[in-house]
Image (cartoon, rainbow, N blue to C red):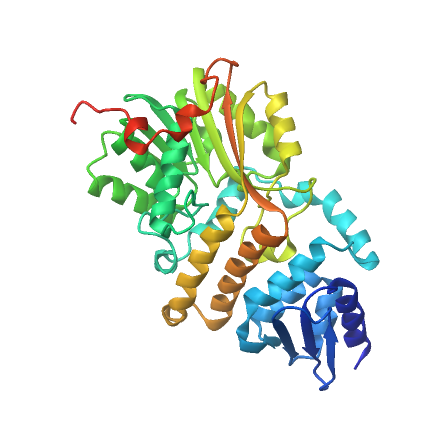
Amino acid sequence: MNVWDQLVDRLARKIVRHGNFEITYADGTLRRYGDGTGKPVGMIIHDREITKKIIRNPDLGVGEGYMDEAYTLRDDDLPGFLALILDNSAHNRMPWFERPMAVLKYLGRGLAQFNPKGRAQANVAHHYDLSGKLYDLFLDADRQYSCAYFPHPDMTLEQAQEAKKQHIARKLLIKPGMRVLDIGCGWGGMAMTLARDYGAQVVGVTLSKEQHSLARERVRAAGLEDRIDIRLCDYRSVTETFDRIVSVGMFEHVGAPHFRQYFRHVRQMLAPKGIALIHFIGRADPPGVTSDWIRKYIFPGGYCPSMSETSAAVEHEKLVVADLEVWRIHYAETLRHWRLRFEKHLDEALTLYDARFTRMWRFYLVASEMAFRHAGQVVFQYQLCHEVEDVPLTRDYLYLSQDQSKPRLAAE
């Protein structure tokens, strides 16, 4: 074993206290870690350079090592491997040699998350302007690329995504004819639900050219062009006011330097007596930084905020938090569905992109799932308004049946 192998050996012994983990190093040395409980997880190192990369940056080294097949896992058990590492890491202190770099990353996060309009559009294009066929491999038919809602654990992905949209619609207390702004409208699924089922007039904004094109096409096919206006623009360019504002899975792309700016725009665009619902991935831990691997390969400029820093921005912009809901394992289950669907269509993914990209995408889905199961990732839903009496005094209205909660439209 070379010096880098020895350092990885020491790191693994410090991190993996529970479980059954073994590494076969490039020179054939086999070392075991943990207390021997649970399903065995085995890593086989093929490239001697990977241990150096892991020590220099564990997050980036482990992710790129999987992408490049610098190591492989027994039975390709990536879920088992990441669950073991993240679960152990959550219960152990950060190794001493990582702490100075962690401090520097935190101090530099303002630059990493600085997202003016031009940069924000480039960051969105990096992820959302990939081939639409890629998303067809794992999303539901409505292309809901955000956390589903599982009030019953045996629900299908389609049922849970529909439940998510209906739950959000109930929080918005929409009545026919209301004007709704959908910030980060994606492929238009939420906008179509609010217009078709609730009679709303919806303006959806996105920075993704691919999403904009397909969303407009879907609106035309559904005959909802008179109710939905999908725009290719930054939310900061919108100047109208709206009765309701909804944003699902977009706040993660705002960046910490822009939190107050975001909520200032929400306040300015929200009409008196209006309601906003902001749904986003957050962290149960204090403020931190984005994974280097996620920032480099998946969501440049992205950051999942803590409750404390989000609430501080809301408070400074004089909005009232009328309701705050925390979804915990719902996104883990959503990602499990996505992962299983993607794995079922790996051959099709390889016709769209190369093997390295396919391994990258699988790593992203698995790592995200395990972050929700073991590393304190959650989903926050902030219901916001101007005054304390703008929403009902109890939450009973959220749990009406779907038929009870929908307004009866004139055409019905």
